Image 1 (cartoon, rainbow, N blue to C red):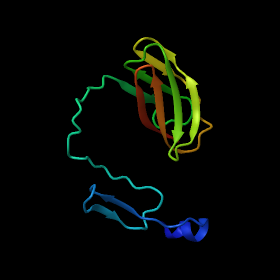
Image 2: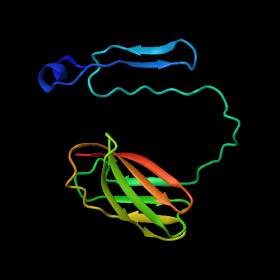
Image 3: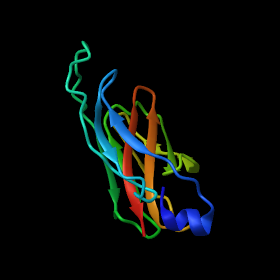
Length: 137
């Protein structure tokens, strides 16, 4: 909820709460938080699965970008990678195939058509899915 949004944009109100499964609330946020709130947490228990060390790296530069940029991923690419970029509402705003080798993929898109804000890069290879956030000026 945000009083100005209700008044001028016709948005409705809501609540944002974090609760232990079957337990008490960990955090209750005030209703007047606007359109975005970030709260970092961990679950604090093991899932009974062996953790795998991810040997990959995603680079976006320049970040933030105002248009043309380079997006690279090094890891298990297996000569096949597609990229999709999503806005923070989950709408797909860009998709393309990447230039690939066995352990590397890159693309040099012109993202000047995007509005200012945060975006999520989603790279799908034959063996893995990689994600990273970046910012558009």
